[in-house]
Amino acid sequence: MTRPGDRWQNWGRSASVRPQLVEFPASTAAVQRSVRAAAARGMRVKAIGAGHSFTGIAVAPGVLLDLSDLTGLVGADRRTGRVTLRAGTRLHQIPRLLAPYGLAMPNLGDIDRQSIAGALSTGTHGTGARFGGIATQVVGVTLVTADGELLRVDDEHEADLLPAVALGLGALGILVEVTLQCVPAFLLHAVEAPEALDEVLDGLEDRVAAADHFEFYWFAHTDRAMTKTNTRLPESAVRRPLPRIGKWVDDVVIGNGLHQIACSVARTVPATIPAINRASVRLWGDREFTDLSHRVFATERSVRFREMEYALPAENVRAAFDALRALVADRGWRISFPVEVRFAAADDLWLSTASGRASAYIAVHRYWREDPTEYFHAVEQIMLGFGGRPHWGKMHTLDAAALRDRYPRFGDFVALRDRLDPARMFANRHLDRILGE
Image (cartoon, rainbow, N blue to C red; front, side, top):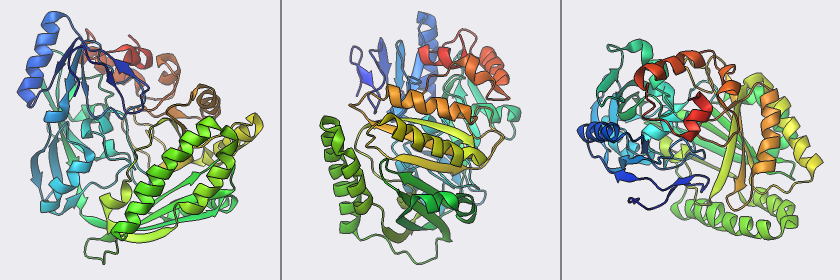
């Protein structure tokens, strides 16, 4: 819990701040009071969730609103599948809230520690060529604007603004409630397997098109891909979950415990990384099971890292990935964390990384105690050359001038920000950089 004078820092330890004032609103009215009081003091205000963004998007030098108490279910309609949640609700809490209604979120990312508002505001996504990011599930929001008033956006109120506020970067107001379009609860049949990397790449387009959800990881210095293929099944299908002890060994002992040791060793003795990566390929990701969707989508991550991810036109992913492989080989770097490749459908959200185009995502990581600058910068130049757009919650160097040409509705978003927050109550240095002052 952050108190005034304490240092707040994000999960990846890549951003921190000592806020002047910290508040814990537990209701919409409390958020309104906080915003009005901040305005009266001439202070900026930022809301935070779980701190899982790697950028400074949530840094709050003035008033920090911790939404940990603004959680829970507001209402659910089993018939329409629409569910309204308070903004601070964590993703991992949502399945339990939806279970009595027989509903589930259509898609999730591989981490479920974020708040729903944070996940939406930064463009969090999973994988699947026919499925969009989490923000595409939004059918309504309520936010507190800079004057402390409520703005409701849904089918019946300001509907033309929904593609902007569903993924608003925290720049338009403070989300207090979100309404999601959910689907009947379903299972996923998961097949995770190590495969020859070149074979995966050669058949990538077909693999992505044939699967409901497909992704792969590549450990540098190996010729293997760790593939994950998830097939959607009705909830009535037979569940064959991982044995509890087997899941604990895979996800906790190997996936986190041994990986933590490996990262620590690799940082001290980089020459060990190729051998460690080859061992990782042998130990991880060879299993098959069927379980409730949220138990398959998300995995536990306790090893801290920093991440950069770029969205590319889907047709560019092979060339960009090949260029990344060549870069690592040419520079002689030793990279311990895997490269992740995922996919998403095109959408119409103004600042979605998949706006207007079917997209592939390439994500690179470094252990949090290692300096990622040289690696990330070089990879970023490759991604920009292939039409890349940076993930809003992950590290990148672009500013408003560079981003404007990558989003057809960027100017419209900035104009809406001017209208809703002309005095920049919700701004910080990061938003000034990516949206302009």
